[in-house]
Every structure is written in C-alpha cells, then in structure tokens.
Length: 307
Image (cartoon, rainbow, N blue to C red; front, side, top):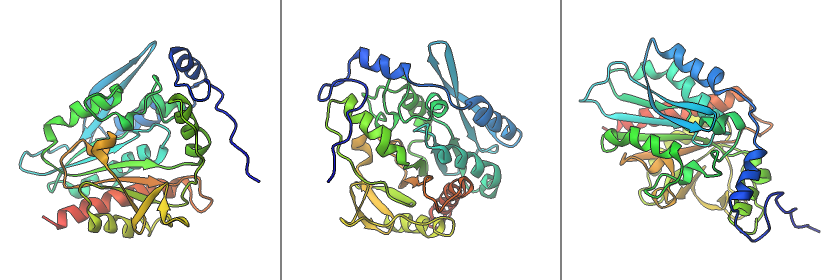
C-alpha cells in the first residue's frame, strides 16, 4: 500500500510561495563547499594556457561571485565556435568539473580547428549550496528567455550574444540525481502551489535533444562514446526516461527554447544537454567527470566531421 509523500516543510499545500516562504527557504540554505577553492582556483591554474575573462558578477547581499569563462588562446574569427557550459544547476557537480577537466586535458587537441568558449560554473551560489535554484528560489535553467528572472542566465546570454550565430555546437553538462526526487521536485511543486507527483530516477547517462530541431546521429555519436565510460539509462516500463518518451537509446526530447533551457541560447545546429547519474552504485566521481569529458569530445569530433 503506497502512502502520499509528506508535505514539503515550507508553505501551505496548494498555495504558491510568497516573500515569507522564499525567505524561510533561503534561511535554510547553508554553504557546503567553496567556489573559490574548487572552481576559481582551477580556472586560475589554466590561465597560462587559455584566455580567462569575467563576464559578470552575482551580488548576493554580502557575497559576490565573479562569473568566469575561458576562451581559446588563439581565437580566430575564421573558425567556428564551440560553446561548453556547466553548473547551470549548481548541485550538478560533474557538469562543472567535467568542463574544467575537458579544458585541462583535451582543449589543446582542437587548437586551430575551433574556437572554444567554456563557462564551467554558471551558478556559483548554487554550487556552494549544492542546490538547483539561485538565491531567489529561481531555476536558472528555466530562465534563458526574455522574461527570465535569473541573473546567472542573463549574464551568460550576454556573453554568448556575439557568437550566437557562429556556434556550430553547444553542449550543456548536467546531472540527474536522487535529490531531484527527494528535494528539488517536491520544492518546485511547493513553490508553485502544485501537487508533487512522485516519479523515478533513471539509472544511467542520457541526453536531451531539441524536439524542434532533432539531431539523432549527433546524439547517437555521443551515446556511443559515453557508454565506453559509464552505462546508458534504459527506458522505464512506459518507454520513458524521467517522464519523456525515449526516441532512441539514451535520448529524449525537450522543446529547448519553449522551456527557456540553456541549450537554446545559440543557433548552433548541434545542441544537447548531458545527464549523468552520480548516485548509481555502478559509478565513481571520476567516471562521472570522465563521462562528461567523453561527451564533449565526441560532440566536437562529430560536428567537425560533418563540415
């Protein structure tokens, strides 16, 4: 016999949050790790090989977070651009460290072939608190739209603006974790005054393609590379992953622009969102980072082979 999940501890069921509820939620958030030592220090070590720039700054009360990006040192206007983003959701750790690991270990392999623009940690406040939302209880990955309310998203959009039409590829590095089901989806339902409907977490890696411009061969090439590192999420009994129909092995579709997702911010013909599953007993932290790196390399290799 199943039982209904306990109400979320903030707010009144069925009533969207107001300022008081958001303030209560914020009061419960604590700093659990350091953006400065775990991310900025790594970027600083890469400065001798790549151009590093600050593209914005989050001013969150007493705390300030510089937003940092890295570019190919020998940027050439005649080369196409590859955009790599991570940490749009700050709690999705391998997205951040996978992006940094790619830059350190593989970016030089593409010198003279593409211009790389990498924003490894789009949401540093959330990175420190291991959370999906920003300080204002807003999801940055639903805010890449004209009416978006996340400065994290607006700053990245401004950075990307000049290369929006020159990008041939954008790969956005994410994770799906057990806390999506235990914390973040219940919090979302409570915030919006809706009923939380329990679901399941897929065990394995998968990709989110654009339903408005699907690229099945591109997605397939990434899946084939990543399965050398970690396992691919199977479809559930309904033929779905996380509530969306599986269109090919390890691939689902979302309407990227309609949902205001990060992967919609360029007009690149090849776009995808990776989803690593770090809570599986079958993987290690190192494998999760390596899966992100494998996805990036496979995405770039495939895109370049089509030119």
